[in-house]
Image (tube, rainbow, N blue to C red):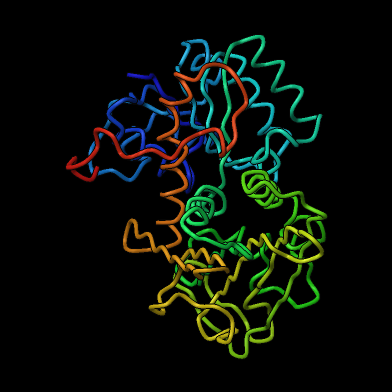
Amino acid sequence: MISTVVWGTGNVGRLAIRAVDAHPGLELTGVIVHNPDKVGRDAGTLGGLERELGVAATDDIEAVLAAGPGAVVYAASGDIRPDDALNDIVRAVRAGAVVVTPSLYALYDIRNAPAEMREPLLAAVAEGGGSLFVSGVDPGWGNDVLPLLVSGVGSVVDAVRCQEIFDYTTYDQEDSVRYLVGMGQPMDYEPPMLSPTVPSMVWGGQVRLMARALGVELDDVRETVERRPLEATVSTKAMGDFEAGTQGAVRFEVQGIVGGEPLIVIEHVTRIHASCAPDWPTPPDGGDGAHRVIIEGRPRIEVTLEALDGDGNRAEGGNATAVGRLVNAVDWLAEAGPGLYDALDVPLRPAIGRLGRKTP
């Protein structure tokens, strides 16, 4: 059993606690929190389980890392604190742990990560013998290993497109929805997530990974952004009202340009209500979310995935699969040894030892 710590208990950390608990090769031995109100609470409660796990949350990072955990699932946000998140991750790698995280987008493509991020991590690996694998929550596997797998069953591949399509009506992450993505803000508001170069910074690494796997050289990585206003005020249970005339939907692409054409594309279509931008792509069953891979070529291949978790929320289901990709990689990483790994290094494997186990 690999002693495993979950660091952070928000939307991702809650799911990570469940995933670690469900994995037959991992043992949850610690939970790190920043909110003093969570200190001392049982991990089962923080993970939304109906039972206690006998692991109390703590804010004593030094003590947890000094105990020498085999793995750390770093689930604390890096969106508005990237320097702090990097410092935390370096600290855990230096302690000798296998670290998996979705928190730093620039590390999806670890080979081409900025030197100011890559060099401290390499030093930590050399000093402590830990390792690192970063994959996204959108989910990362849907923008790298899945399209690559599907491309391999075609004869001719003309283009690859990955889509995330979501209606955030039931989503419970107001700060990100309103301020990072800009839903409910005036149309002249510039959401940080949509600022020029930011989509490419976040998803460009996955475009480059796919290009490398497909054996093509990128001329460039470009981005396009479209926004639509709400025609009427809508109300959501978790986040309140979104006023008519404010941003109600956004669609953007991060494009890998090959021979002057966008041949590798990651596209996001996000709404705060299904009534906004109905002409844009939607899930095939009209639900609140889906991930889709389209391989243009011969044959044309289209694969749509819908993941449900909790009360049937597909946004949470997508997050759960992203967390599963990370947590289920821990034992492989432990065997692989110290280093910095990306999605092309880490195999997507069957659920060995988990078939028939009851849902936690």
